[in-house]
Structure formats: C-alpha cells, structure tokens
Length: 365
Length: 257
Image 1 (tube, rainbow over the protein chains, first blue to last red):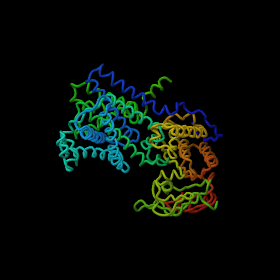
Image 2: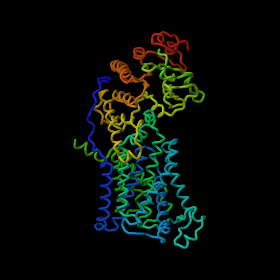
Image 3: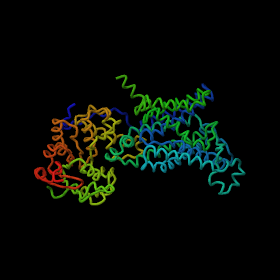
Image 4: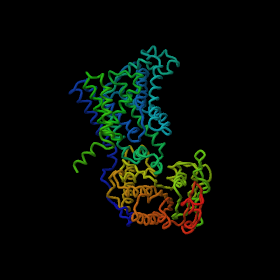
C-alpha cells in the first residue's frame, strides 16, 4: 500500500447518510415502546399466566440494569462491579416513598388505585426519584474513577456495594401501622426505618409489565442515542485510548463521571421497579456483589458496548435459570463455566462492540 | 524569523525524581512556521511534546499560545485552545470507524448538551450532520473517504499514520505537533510525506513542529531546527547552521562526550 499524502482540491461530499429528521423522530421510538408496553401489559398475562409474566418482568428489569451498566463498562471502559449497589439505593428510596408516602397521602398503607391510577403515578415518580438518588451515589462513586484504573476501580465499586449492604443492615424495623408512624420521633426516621437485615417488607406491589417496559424503552433509547452521538463517541474514545482521547480534546474526567451518573440513574429506576415487584422483598443482600456480578456477566457475554447484544444476554441469562428451576443450585457454576468458555472462544462477547443488525447487514452484502 | 510568535515557550522544564528530562526549553513558533525538533534517542523530544500538550505540567517556565496561557492546563483544554498532536506509536481509536475517529473532534465545540442529545433535537441533528459533512470533506482531502466506514484497526500502517494526522487536523488546530510521522515509511513515502506536510501547513494554515529522526526530511522542510540532547537544547537555528554545529555532530556521533 503506497503511502502518498495527496492533497487534491477539496471535493465536498454533499451526500450525508439518510436519516429521517424532524421532531417526530425524537419521540417516535418512545411512543412505539410505550405502545408495546401497553400491549404486553394487556395481552401477555392472559396468554402465559402470572408465572411467566413475572419472568418477563424480571427480564425487563435485567435489561435496564445490563444496558445501563454497559454505559460504564462497555462504552466508557470503566470496570464497575457495584451496579447492584445503585439498584438497591434506588429500590430503597422508591420503596420509602411509596410505603410511607401512601400513609401520608391517603392515610393508609398498601396499594392505591387501579392501572394508571394515582398510586401507580406515585410509584412511577418514586422510581425516578430513586434513580436520581442513585445518580447522586453514582457521582460519588464515579469520582475515584478519575484516579483509578481497571482492577483498582473495580474494588472501589465493589466496596461501595458492600458498605451499602452493611449500612442497610443497621436500619430500624419497618413501621407497620398508622399509630407507629404517628408516634415515631425524629430518632426513628434517621436512619429511615427500612427493615434492617430482614429487608424492607410491605412495599406496595405496583410493578407491572407496562411500567417495566416503558422504562426499558427509555433506557434502551437513551443508551442507543448516547452511543451514536458526539457525547457517546467521547465516552467510547475514553475506553479506546485515554491519552489519545485527551489529545482530541475529550474531558475524560467529565465523561467518566457522566457515564457513572447515567448508569446509576437507570440502575436506581430498575431498583424501584424491583422493590415493588410481587414476591420480592428488597433486602441488604441485594446490594452485594453477587447480584452485581450477574449484570457484569450480562455485559461481558453480550459484548462490551453492544446494546442489542447486552439486551439479548440479559434475556437469556434471566430466562435460563427460571426455565431450568431444578438446576437452580448449579446456576453459579454454569455461569462461571459459560464465562470461562466465552473468554476463551469469544473474548469480545457475543457481538463484540457491534449491534446485532450489523452482522445481518454484513451477511446480506 | 517573524517577530511575534504564535507559540511562545520560555524556559520550561520537568524533572522525574532526580532525572531532569527537559531543562530550559524555549521555542518561538510563528504562525505558519514549520520547525523541527531533533536529537538522539532519549533526548527528551517526546517529553517536550508532552509538556506542550499538558500530559505533563512543566515545573518551571512559561508557555503561551497567542494570548492564552498554557501553564497548568489539562490536555483537553490545550487541544481546545488550538494545539493538536500525533503520537510516535500510533494511537487511533481502533474500534471506532475511520469516520468516527475524525468526527470525535466535533465534541470539542458541541453546543448541544446531554438533553439535546438524548431528545435528538433539531439543533442536535443539524450539528451532527454538519460534523459528518466536515469529517467526510477532510477524509476526501486525504483521499480516504472510501474508507470512512472501516474500523481504524483494519487500516494499513500508512493509512493509520495518515488518519492520525487528519484526525488531529479535525480539531481545527493552530499548531500541529507531529511526533515522528516518517517512522516506518520507505524513502518514496517519506518524500511524499515531506510534500504533504508543507501542503498541510499551507492549506490548513497551521504552524507545524516536527519531531523526526530522518535528517534528510527535517533538513529539507524545516525552517528552523532545535536540537536536544539529554534534555538540554544544544543548538537552535536554520538547517544549515545546525548541520555544521560541532556540538550536534558530537551528540549524534558520540564524540567529545
């Protein structure tokens, strides 16, 4: 290959890749996602029954967590294993709001209203507040990433989850009737009474397919748009080569912290959905590293940076253990083996940094 | 030599522990100048680049780009103020496409924040389209437009070097620092490179500071040359002057050590 550096007159290329524009494109994917969420909510339980609906909800929550973790681990290349910590922060915050909020607003504990009724809106708002509080935690945990790399950063994020777990174990027991709530003085509210080691029981079970898949849509759309924007390219450049990124004018400190904050926000939202799910009692152990590793495995398996790959991995790795219930106790062994095999056979993950449709396009060419 | 320098560097230096890597380095690079920085291996040439681009902060001295004080600035701030560089060992973003390697520069002057990006506002779309067009124009100037969708990793060595230069130009620099651009090229390629460095200087109106081991190339295109040895400037002047300086000859041939 000859390496001439020719300098012909500029020939501006007029043709830019076709991309539909206009304000409609801004909301269209979200609208489609919400319609799908409504359809899932209305149709699916009738077909598959409550058990499988529950698995589909679990899958949705896992998608939010894996896709958001991928912003930090995959796109920005910062190895975080504290994602469950952010999830738990969001879950407890949201639970605190709906549980005690219900009493202060309606005078009683428990679930309020029907589908899309007032109770559900309180729940949706609580998930977003949970996300915001988690984002604040993400900011604080993101700061060490400015100085630490690789394994060292991973240990800090791991430590965050473990500290959170221990702190949550020290909280008081849940105030379970109106008299107790009225009688409670300041000392009982600080730290908030969220159940200590046994977990926060009694959170109203608002989580349904509609809300889960609405938030899944928002998460995936945000992640996708981020990845294909100037901002996302700046994040990816940090993963690729920090020194070159700086030389190109990328403020790597800002990109890293932004990645942590965004990922933590969606983890917090997912935590809110998780805490309000039927059959779930959110407890301190949810902040621990085992749950974090589940999501790390999903991002590694799906391919670091591939949104569709990570989504697929979240679906498979959530559905598989449920479908193979009898082998529950072998789950960790199977996951570990799967990871080892992946590292040997395909270290870049199922889809590497690409999206699924890139492979489709390549084949059809 | 022009009276007013674009890049004005006075007596900068840095020590790593007891090792004085660079001492009292001074440079006055005028707008549109094409200067060279040479010296034996380990003389501190790349360290000078790292000082100029904020990778290291100088222990002493002063640096200015036109009216902007560069001392203590972070690398990305220095890039924003108008100094771009390439690296001795190529540092592209291997898993980004050629186009995205170039388009990344757009985030420097982005007017759209996080919200605009995520909502895909009209302003955001407009900016991204602009960016893509500018990047493709730049690629076409270097005859690389048909490789826009390839991963940077998959390019040949020569194309990678070329992409690194044009990626640096995408940041709209006023000063371009080239760290051994001719490394690994054969004689014909070096000839072509010499021509294109001059052309880049003229076309993009940048001042160029060049680190190079190939004396023929340096003597051929540089207007003035600074020679470093053990972190100290041992000679500075036009190529003719530098070539005949006994200190330079001694530094390269090891005489008089």
